[in-house]
Image (cartoon, rainbow, N blue to C red; front, side, top):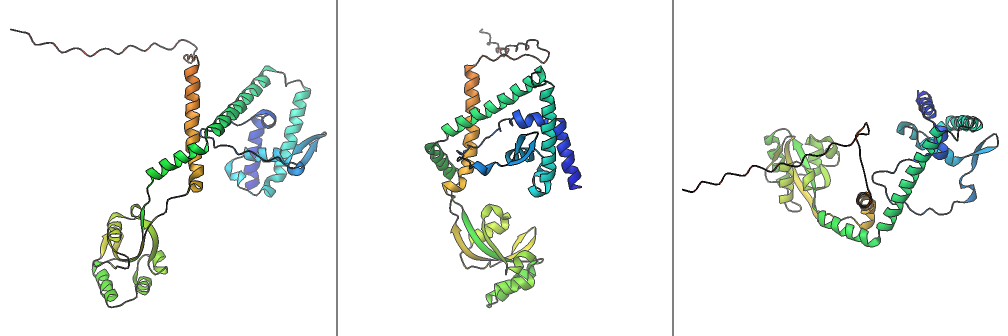
Length: 312
């Protein structure tokens, strides 16, 4: 089944002109490109020859490019599993391309047009990457980080345990046991309907107020460290007995932790600004699908003026 899906994907790619794409086509620029890091010089054996077709080398990078064009479910397979089929398709692609060159098809208008479009996409991507890299400066990142911290202030967290039961009377009986010195963790394991938390003695770990249902969160955040709820708390899940273990302020993320997120947002803004600036400086004419002029927009009609009251 796996091999059938993979081969179908390869055949589909071949039918769409993968042989040409491997030599000329470059993916279109992403909507929100991330800044590309400067690549270190590759060692001589970093891109070894994995096949030769009539003397022309096929490199490991050719394999990687083809795998990157395959469907996601195929890309997730171990490379060792799909490698033989990829090599087979690359060899076939080389042979078909070679035959096309011998037939002097490289100079046809169709091929030249496709190569030109692929070149345009590559130039678009290179220009966007250049602009993004030059405009995302340490100062810009620092400014974006400060804005992020303002928009995401530190949140309070509570570490609590709970015992969940079906009826209020059960919960009140548990509170009475706890007030007499009962062990919370032991009672949670014995009586709680929440199997996951029960295994941990009722422990829910740390949580912010917005991650719990409102009645539970309101009660837990109103309690003091070490306190057990004096009355059961009702939610749609049942009746809770809560014990607050700890309270803290959640630390804000460091710049390094949110840097990829900030770079992505800055990249999006930069791309929008670049395109907007280019459009402002350009003469752009658009036409209808049949090439005819666009209909002129009718000027907005002024609202009728209210009649002035007649003077006596």
